[in-house]
Image (cartoon, rainbow, N blue to C red; front, side, top):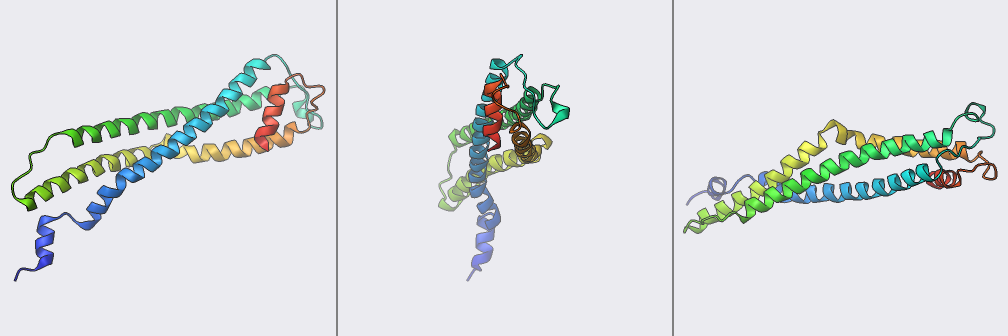
Length: 195
């Protein structure tokens, strides 16, 4: 009587490859969802930053009890740094989105390619399994390419920097009196972001 393990290993790929082929598209879909959320949030925040900079241009405020800021346009520069960080995040997220969409197109193209199945059920099963593993390989390679890029690796650090930057802005600009600050939109926006 033949050993079932020998038969299975000659017919089927290793179980780890099967799991990887099945889970890689789900992992890429999760990365895509996270990337889209980051893109939407960064785009919305960047939009408000730009609107604030345009509305309150040439309107400058003095920050009380922070003498080194009282003669500079600290509010505008603060928002400009935030806008630059958000712009970097958006550029990297858009590139990642386009690459993921290209991967999905490649997967769709490989899935829609007609494959002639052999008459032998065992061979037909192998052909279908290989096609499924190929789709998983596309997803796995795309995921690895994205997550190992230096710019993509920087995104969590940019988020941490932006968090600390907003908190420091809230501390600084809570001392800016609203009555003497004509740049109301930017002032309330900085305070709101800090909260």
